[in-house]
Each structure stands twice: as structure tokens, then as C-alpha cells.
Length: 239
Image 1: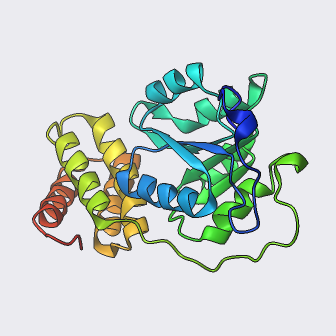
Image 2: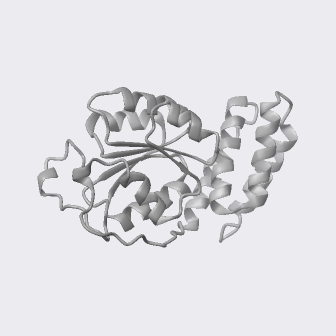
Image 3: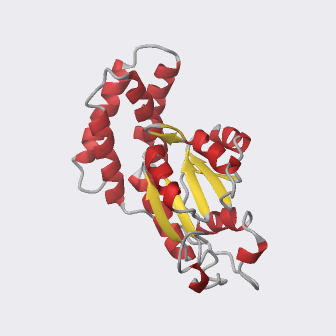
């Protein structure tokens, strides 16, 4: 539980149906769509959620609160989540559970090397998988007692959160000459598009990332991405 919560002693114990009851989860995630998924997963599990959308905001939060669980997106607008994972896992007293999340499968290896307790591959929609990733790393006294039926529930984030992400990236693309911004756009959109099952947008993000990684001009790919973003912004229902 949140170690600085003055009401911690009165927080109810976890139950079979709400196994994360009494826990506070800090989600460090810049995507509204991904964070909405986390909010629903926490709500269904009984956990409270706090959110930070960048490293700076997360560090400010951690100066005041010490949550039970921290879930860190690896690609953030002001740096790599790997750096924060290293800080969290080397600081005493240590947060009970530190998990990394990313749409990039290579993130598993780097986050575990930094000390993360586990890795959540995006999209994160399975309630059972989310709960198990946290529960298997909690101390024994935070585990729910008795038998627990694994839920087969799959959550579906509000599509308006996807639109918020499209608006965010449209703003970033206002400065196409910024190479670092293009790298961020490719990384961000790859994860969001995969979570939203938008194959066309995911491919465009992948093409942009490949061009940037090769050190080649990505003007054509950036223009294609910008066009797809505008298409989605004009749709009342995303995709």
C-alpha cells in the first residue's frame, strides 16, 4: 500500500474478486489510450491509480508519495523509462513492485536488466494477466487469501482517449524539423496504434522508425503519418 497514506491502517485487505484492493498504482504513461486501459484494469482489480505523463512529473510525485506499484512506459517524452526503473529499484526503501511496459518487445530485456520485476507488453487488455504480473511480485502479506478464480475479462478503453493521443501527436508534428520529435512520434504511435489495432497507422509508424534508425531522410514517412493523424482526428469514432 501507499506507505505515506495517513489512512493506510484502515485500508481493507485484498479479496478474491478484488485482489489489488489497498494498493496504489502509479502509472507513468504519456498515452491517454494506454492510461485509460490501466485505469480500467486497476478499477476492476480494486487498486487506486495515480498517473504521470513524463519523467519529470513522476519524480515530483515520488517525492511526495510512495506507491505500492509503479508501472513505467519505456518511451517517454522527456527520456527513457529505463532510467527511472534503475532509480526506483536501487533506492531504499524500494517500491514493492516495479513493472515496465512497452509496445517494443526489445523492451523486455532492457527493463529487466535495469531491475524491473516484470514486463507488460502492449496492448495490455487482459485483467488476469495484469493482476498476475503484480500479485506474483508482492510480499506474502499483500496477497489475497483463499482460492481466486482467474478472470477472462478483456477491457476496452474509451476511443475518445485514442483521439486525445492523435491530437497530442498532431501538436508534436507542428515542428517536423526536430529529429528527436520524429523519433518520439514513431515510438509513441507504434504503441498506440498496436493497442488500438490500427494496422495502417502502425505500419506508417514502423516505416518512420526504420527511416530514422537508418539515418535517412524521413520526410515522406513523416508526411504520411501526419496525413493519417489528420484523418483520424476528423473521424467521430476513431479508426
